[in-house]
Image (cartoon, rainbow, N blue to C red; front, side, top):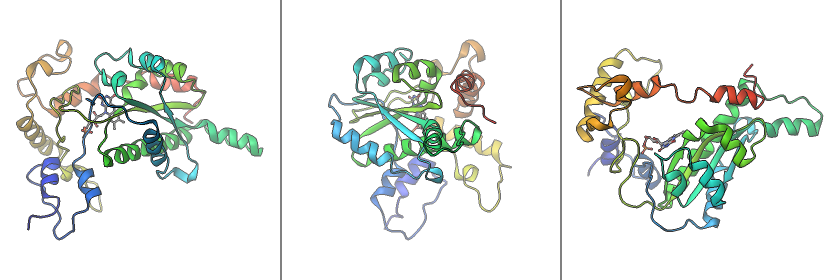
Length: 286
Ligand SMILES: Cc1cc2nc3c(=O)[nH]c(=O)nc-3n(C[C@H](O)[C@H](O)[C@H](O)COP(=O)(O)O)c2cc1C
C-alpha cells in the first residue's frame, strides 16, 4: 500500500520529504495538504446563505483570551466593491470574484466594552494591535479551509492594506479597526493567474528542514537549502524572463528563482504607509 498522503506531500514539499508511515488517510488533512489559492472563478454565484455560513465558520476560530477581536465585512454592494478593486488592475479577481469579504482586526470593540463596564480597557498598544491581527488571520484561514472543504476556491488579498485609507473610507472603518486581508470566494474555473502563478498548481513550500525545528531553532543550512529549493521550484515551473520582478531596478538575472523574486519583492518595502495610517487610527504601538 502506498504511504498515506505520499502524493500530496511530494507535490507540496518535493521528493526528499518522506510521508509519515502507518496513518489512516483523513479527507480533511488530505485537502489541507493539497490546497491552493484560486484566482479564476466560474460565472456562478456563491449563495448569500453560504457566504454567511462561511463567515460563521470563520468566527468559530480560536481567539486570543476570548477577546474575539476579528470583524468580517461582506462587500455586497457592487459600487463599493468597484472602488476597492480600482487601484489594483493587475489583480482583477478583487473585483470579479463572486463574493468578497474583508477580514479586519478590531481593537475598538474591547475599548468600547471597557467603556460600558467603566474600566479603562485601553487597547491601542502593540499587544492590542497584535492580538486583533492574529484573531483576524485565524478567522481568515478558517474561512479559507471551510470554503475549500465545499469545493470553493479562495484568494486572500492583503494588497488592500496598501490603500488602507481608501478601504476605511469605503467600509466606514472607525479608529482601531483595520483591514488584515480581503478574501475572494468563488467556484474555481480552470487555471490560475497570479503574479507568477500560471496555470494553477499546488505551490512547493520551503523544505521542512528550514521551517520545522525540533527542540531548538537551527537555520545553519539556510543557504544550501534555499539554493535547492530555488532549483526545485524552477524545475517545476520555470520563471519566464519577462516575469522577473522589477528589472528596471534590479536588472535581469541569469539564474532567477524564488529567493531572488522574494528578496526583490521585500526590497520594495510594500506597505510602508500602513504604520503611519494605523497611528492615525489611534494605535500607539507602546
Ligand atoms: C495574508 C495573505 C495575503 C495575500 N494577499 C494576496 C494578494 O493581495 N493578492 C493575491 O493575488 N494573492 C494574495 N495572497 C495569496 C498568496 O500569494 C498565496 O497564498 C501564496 O502564493 C501561496 O500559494 P497557495 O495559497 O496557492 O499555496 C495572500 C495570501 C495571504 C496568506
